[in-house]
Image 1 (cartoon, rainbow, N blue to C red):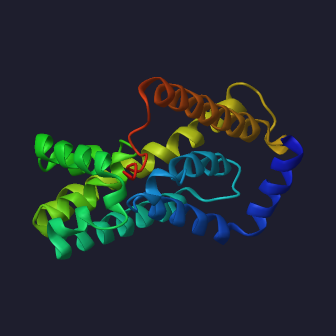
Image 2 (image 1 turned 60 degrees about the vertical axis):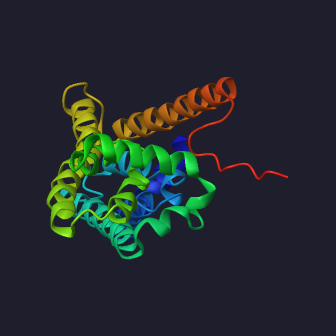
Length: 220
């Protein structure tokens, strides 16, 4: 893994714009219904945040790329739902995920305008609530008044942990900056956490007969 990460860090340092584009697309795709349940956008953002303390990436462009991607993704999903109304919730591909659509609608009905705020921090509901809010005729001004502050909190919540953790490892644990040890440890921790979470989700689905984002079974 170290032999892979060192060339990766060097590549990002030489082509930072590609990293910013990756952050933007990760946040954007994570907000797309169905797709957002499959794209590990948060994982990508958490991992790349480790490259800020060493100067390979800059903090403000990282935050801006993540926030812009999330805003465009959420806003587009909301507008599609707002223009199509409830019809979109029973159309493909959402028609293949009636359970998630029902949960998103119940989440929205329970929390009202706050659902838009809370959903930004709750995958995979995050990928379905904006389009549900639009389909249920939530006014645009009300949606964006909640969605934008949520994104402005969500982006730092995903970027700053990596920045602070790697900085602490170098400044307080005495790990050398030039050897990228802090970045390695953070990225290994993220990768390990994702594997553990994936195994936990798989175990829960196996015990309970399927997960919340599985498509509906076709009846013969």
